[in-house]
Image (cartoon, rainbow, N blue to C red):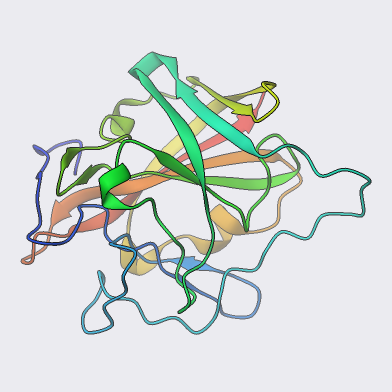
Length: 212
C-alpha cells in the first residue's frame, strides 16, 4: 500500500489494513500498526500486545455534546465516505472497519469530535482482501487540500491539510497524533510503505489537518 508501489489486493486471509494497536504508557496511546479486527498476538507488527486502552478525550462540562461525524470528503483526490463509529476491541486494540466494508472509513470515538478542540482521528483501509478500499488514494493528498467532515445534522467542518508522514508501525508518533492539543485537529490514518515477508505493510500513512 505504498504510494511508490503497486497495491497488493490480498494478504491471504488478512485484510490489507493490518492492526491499529494502541499501547498506553501513562496517558499516551501508541498506534503500532493496522490489521484485521481479530487480534493475533503471535507476531509483530501485525500482531498486537496491548498494555492498556487509548485514553478517551475528556471534554469540559457541556450542556450538549456535538453531533457525531457522519461523512468525510476529500474532493481533490475523489474520496467520499460515510463514517462508522469505531471504539475498542475487548483486548484494548482499536477497532477498524470490517474488511467487507473497506470502502467505508471510521471515526475513533475515543478522540475528539471533528471540529472540536483536540485531535479527531479517522481510520480507513487502503486495500482489503476484497480489493481497493476507501483510502487507497490517500497518499495523493497534498498540503493545503480541503478535507470536509459533515456531522449527523448536516453541518460541515472544513480542514486544511498541513502535512503528511509515513511512519514505521514500530515507532508510531503517539503523542503527536493522539496527544493533547488546543488545535481543532484532524488525523487520517491508513497503511503505507513496503511489505514484509508475510505481505503486510510496514508503515502507517498519517495525514495532519487543522480546522479552517
